[in-house]
Figure 1 (cartoon, helix red, strand yellow):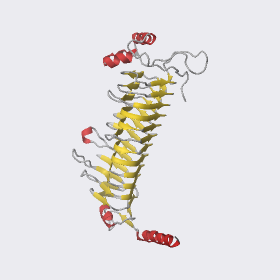
Figure 2: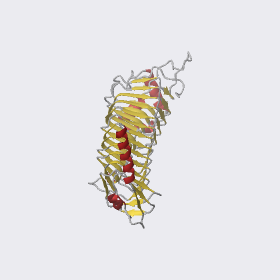
Figure 3: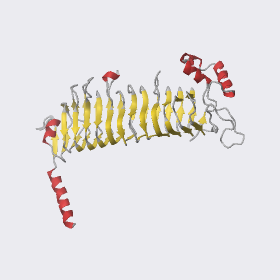
Figure 4: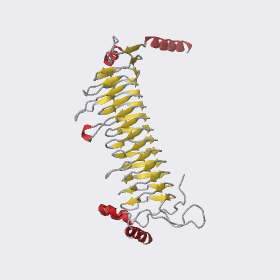
Amino acid sequence: MRKFSFLLFFFFCFSSLQAKEIQVCTSCEVNSLQQAVDMAVDGDVIRIKSGIYKEHGVEILNKSIKIIGEGYPVIDAEMQGTAITVKAENFSIEGIKIINIGTSHTNDFAAILVSRSKNFRIVNNRFENIFFGILIERSSAGTISGNKMKSKSRIQAKSGNGIHMWHSEDLTVKNNEIIGVRDGIYLEFVNNCVIKENLCKDNLRYGLHFMFSDHNEYLGNTFENNGAGVAVMYSKFIEMRRNLFRKNWGSASYGLLLKEISDSELINNTFEDNTIAISADNTNRINYRHNDFISNGYAVRIRGACYKNVFTENNFLANSFDVAYTGNINENEFLKNYWSEYTGYDLDKDGTGDVPYRPVKLFSYLVNRTPEAIILLRSIFIGLLDFSEKVSPIFTPAELIDPQPQMRKIK
C-alpha cells in the first residue's frame, strides 16, 4: 500500500512538472488562441493578454486545458461563424470577451459550442453581438456561471438563444445575465440541472424555455420584460422556487406558461405586472404555495385538462382577475389563500374568513368569450354583475371556492 501511494504521488508530481503556461498576446510569438491550443497538452494553461484577436473556428479537441483571459481580451469572430468549438473533458474558459458571431438560417453559430464533453467550466465571460451565446449539446457535469450576454435581436428568425442546452444532464447555470436574445436560457431533453440566480430580461421570446426536460430546478431567477417570462412544456418533476416574474406584458404574454407538465412545485415565487401571471394547460399534480400575485392582468388562468392542482397560502393582490377557469374543476383546489378583493368577515377572529370566497368573476367569463368587453372593466355595471354571480353562480363554476380565505396577507 505504501509503495502504491508513493507511485501515485510521483505520478501527480510528474504531471504537474509537465504542465505549462502558454501566454498569448498581440506582440508575442504566440499571437492567436488557435496557435496556443495547437501547442497545448493536457493540463496546460493558456493565458490570453488584453487585446483584440480576430479569429473564428477555434477548435479544442480532446485536450483538458484551461483558458484564462486577463482584462477581458476580445475574440472577434467578424461575423464569420462560431468562435470556439470544444470537444473535450476537464476544460475551462474564463475571463474572455467574444463578439460578432455570424448568423445563419441553417447553422447554429455560437460564441462557444460545447459538444460531447463533460466536467467543464465556462465562467465570467462576456458576449456581445451574438447569435447563440453558449451552445451545449450531448454534454454533462458542467458549470456555466457569471457570464454576461448582450445582443440586439429584433426578429426571431435571425436570432439565437443565450444559453442553449440540448440532450445534456447535470449542468449548473447560475449568476448569468442575458439580455436581448431570442430565449435567454433554453433546455431541450435536458435532465437533472439547476438554473439559479440568473437575470433574463428584454429577450424576444422567453426568459427561460423548457422542453421535454425532467428533474430540473430553477431557483432565485429574475425574468423581466421578455416576450414571455418562462415556458415549461412536456416536462415533469420541476422545482420552481423564489423566482421573480415581472413586466412580461403584451397581448399574448405571461409570466409563466405551463403546458403538459406534472408532479412539480411552485413555491415562494413573485408574479408582478404580467399580462397573465400563470397560464396552465393540461397540468397535473402541481403544488402552488406561498406565491405572490401582484397587479397582474390575470393572476391564474387555467385551461382544460388540469387535474389535482393545489393552490394554498398564496397572496392575490390587486389583480384585474384573480382566477380565470375553463372546464371542469377536476379535483383542483384553492385553500387558505389571501385575496385582496375578499369582503367577507371573521366573527371568531381566528384569521380565516367565515364566508367562502369565489375567485372567478362573471366578467372574466365574459371577456374569455368576448375579448372586446375588457373596455368595461371598471364600470359600475360590471361590478353589479359580478356581485349577482357570487350570490347565485350560473356561468362560473359554483364549486370553485376557497373555503378558508385568509383575512391577512400571508408572510
